[in-house]
Amino acid sequence: MLFSSSYRRIPLIAALASLVLLPVLRGEVHLPTGFAVEIVADSTAVSEPIDLTFSPDGAAWVTGRAGDLWRIDPASRATRRVGRVDTDVSGDRGLHGVALHPDFPKTPHVFLAYHLTNHLEGKYRSRIARWTVAGKGDTSTLAPLSEKSLVEWDGDQAGQHVGGGLLAHPTERVLYVTTGENNQNANLLKYCDDPENKAQSLHDLRGKVLRMGFDGSVPRDNPNAGNPGPLGLIYTRGHRQPWSLSFDPKVGVLLAENGGDLADDYDEVNRLVPGGNYGWPKVFGDGWLTSSRTNRVEGFTSPWFNYRRNTGASCTGAVIYRSSSKTAAYPSHYQGGLFYADFGRKTIRYAAVNPKSGRPGESEAFLQGLTAGPVALRAGPDGALYFITHGGATKASTNDAIVRIVWKP
Image (tube, rainbow, N blue to C red; front, side):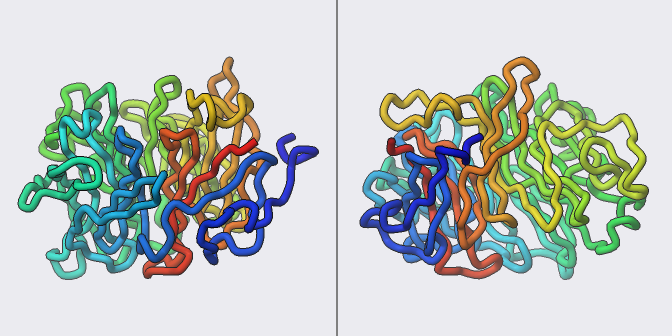
């Protein structure tokens, strides 16, 4: 087991060397021997960070819920705001996902998911937009008036769960988008039998993963391409609060997702398949009927990996680790394995993927001891795992930071 003889506690001074001491890491973090945490940007550089992605030059592009977009050089820690969007920040809304065109910077497009400030009373309005980036490297900036709205939809302000994860697929040449189911019903058992529930309806964009061209068009091979207008973008359905997307060439597209709030519900990492119905709110976990909690039903796509919520959980990121770095790559034990972040439990865990079955086995502890939960787990081009600590929920916090886990044998 990972935390038997190889496990140790890493004091903060040793783990962070001369880096700034943050409340999010104050005390001790628990990692296997040879690993350390480093602060790439703290709360004085970024406020309410939500998502990040990497450009070919190794820079991290980071969104802030209040509307800021930053470019951060992990080597020098230089942080520069490259643009800002006006966004609705009521409830769990704001600027969320970010993705760069696969040919960036040759094709200088950045995709953003956020919520408009002008919307109908009692509603919110989600937008997925494409912006053009002017300049290169540390001179990058969002070109004024370059925004192109790709798709928009309305939701109910009284509800929660808005999704906002983005993935620019490098080989399919499409943009994947997650949308939350915007649930307003606190009575889960009643909600699961609601014939008008949004996550199951093919006439509503909420509770879905959308798949579109980089210009917002409907790909011809989408499973619902024949549906009118934006409904043709629906790729999968039956999602609750899908946080983030990642792509691995061997496994495919992975989705980190929150399940129901009852103790016997599951949080999930889903492997996306065209037209898949992942069951929410009709079923939870591996097809267990939500209303009875005991009967299992067929016809839904089972999770690729899941774990019980018990006293609370929130799966916010999942990535298959692969690195070709000769100096900074994690040990071979971790290559091809699943790392996933849990915001509620303030942990990052690891599970080896069985090469024969292609599925993860039992997970084991990797990073513990954070004060604020992790979101936006990503594998960096330097061989490190990166994540965001978003400490204030709906406000800025001294726990806000961009953090990476490095291998230092």
